[in-house]
Length: 96
Image (cartoon, rainbow, N blue to C red; front, side, top):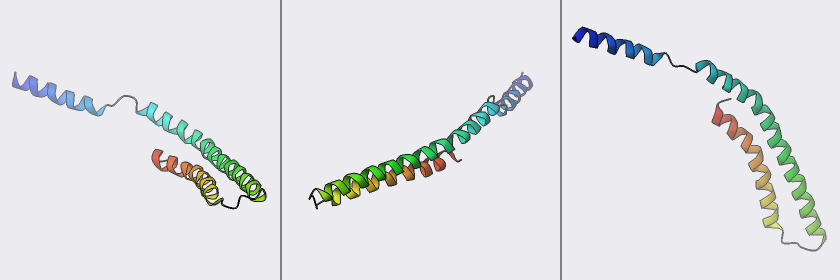
């Protein structure tokens, strides 16, 4: 009885190493790697659009006589910076 129990435990231990889904996980990683470059480009395009939009609004406010625009400059700058860093963060997070 002890030998049978030992044999069953050894077989269960070997079964634990045979993880199903490794191939699917590799496929998902490859799909994510392919889609990441599109997301990275999208974050750069959004950062560009945010920066241009902010520059136009700040220039318009300056020309209309509002000279206390320091908070506006910081807000638009950090919004664009966040979008640029989002791509690097995603790359580090997913290990791509």
